[in-house]
Image 1 (tube, rainbow, N blue to C red):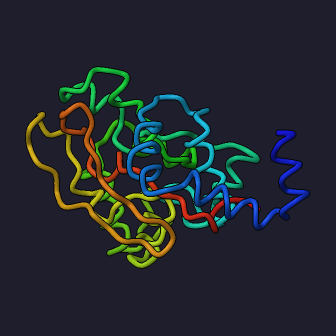
Image 2 (image 1 turned 120 degrees about the vertical axis):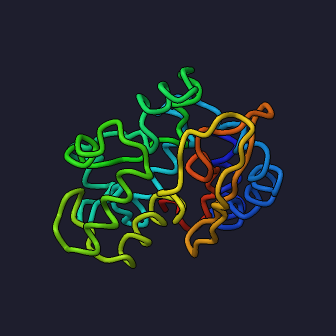
Length: 214
């Protein structure tokens, strides 16, 4: 830290930060080092915490929330929700904690939404959200417009194809979940030559530098 402070004093913060970015945040970091670092079940992982910090910075809302932000839930109360529920994965061929508790399967969610989803798979609860949008009769959260749902998924780095996710047996292919978001890019990955229990839900999120807290 002393070295950083000295160089900031000598070069200025902006110049030194740019130097660090060029040295440390190469394509190798985004495509190899960060994906490997996200192979974790720890919610206190600095990489997962950085993602949450970026959500706070960009005023992102909780998963399937219409108004409640990640910042609100960090300051008051919110649940870490399994996007593909733990019980569902355990019953469909993914009993290992290292599968269902991957940080890529977590999203900060209002307690009421988490309870309403329970152990249902995305294809089930996202169909309920779609019906809610069609009828404007609230059943799961308060989102009633497709554009708003798309924005919410983007804010949580989740694919538009989330409703197609099921616990397929190892070796089967997933729906094409590649999406290009204005805020951050999402790319799918594999590990240990084993099919994921999720497609882009276990995607690795490249946080653009201007998303990070100043």
